[in-house]
Amino acid sequence: EAGVAQSPRYKIIEKRQSVAFWCNPISGHATLYWYQQILGQGPKLLIQFQNNGVVDDSQLPKDRFSAERLKGVDSTLKIQPAKLEDSAVYLCASSLGQGAAFFGQGTRLTVV
Amino acid sequence: GESVGLHLPTLSVQEGDNSIINCAYSNSASDYFIWYKQESGKGPQFIIDIRSNMDKRQGQRVTVLLNKTVKHLSLQIAATQPGDSAVYFCAENISGTYKYIFGTGTRLKVLA
Image (cartoon, rainbow over all chains, first blue to last red; front, side, top):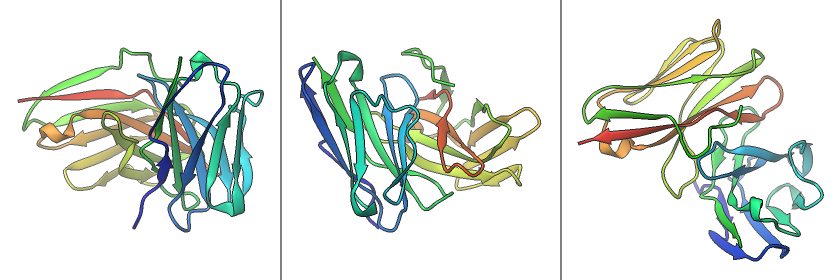
């Protein structure tokens, strides 16, 4: 069974530029999550989708971050404009309802 | 809560010894818990889970113990191997939310 796929693996951008990350969850998983993990910390939930609807985006900085999940499968997370403090690993995960969440390898973003 | 910064708690154990990693969770309404292992440059990897109607669950070389009275979770690794070196996180799922909140990570170092 294929795992959660994310791309790109690495991205370096200048502050005030925009960037987008892509995630393909495990087939059949209705729930999709985006987490932000700053170096040395645990993952922090940014947004949670159930199929193509948003369940929780309370910790998403909506002035600069946006996310969508087209047709309830793939998802993209966008940052515009990026700030230095957005440097982190962005992790996508998926789950079958209230089952274990499985994570992708993440995208390491460096904002310079 | 959020993890500490760059100074994660560290547990150093001799190869072959048993390891015990502890976690305090925050919400008494949490009913499902997962331990994840995260190696450098990778996403969190599922190790073992436990539901709140159990107090112990065993896997291959790993055991999770749950004490709901004091909101405490532990992960026991038997005969620790060099490949067990990683950061370990516990995650709690608040009943009905399908949302995973990560605890403070612990870095496990296995000494040869």
